[in-house]
Image (cartoon, rainbow, N blue to C red; front, side):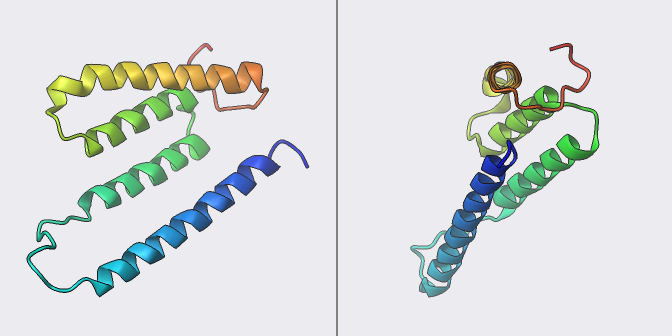
Length: 125
């Protein structure tokens, strides 16, 4: 019971899915023959940077007073820049608008409609 049970269960299930996916990817990668069909420029840089961003996001939410809206907007923009293939100048305005819009909308839905407490930070929402 309680409002914390559902997020914990969902998070635990996502962790199980992520671990299963990681194991299948590592096993598939180990079975690949050394051939020119496998690109030599496959990089682990972006996945590790995304993982670092996720850990940083969790730390900021838990241990600082930044608040959900600002932390989520920054996290979204950082991830979109890491995953984007277009030049930053073409997408940064769009990414910031989407990040702020999503962060504020999610914050208001969770806090006002669902009654779930998210860290407000310094923003008067």
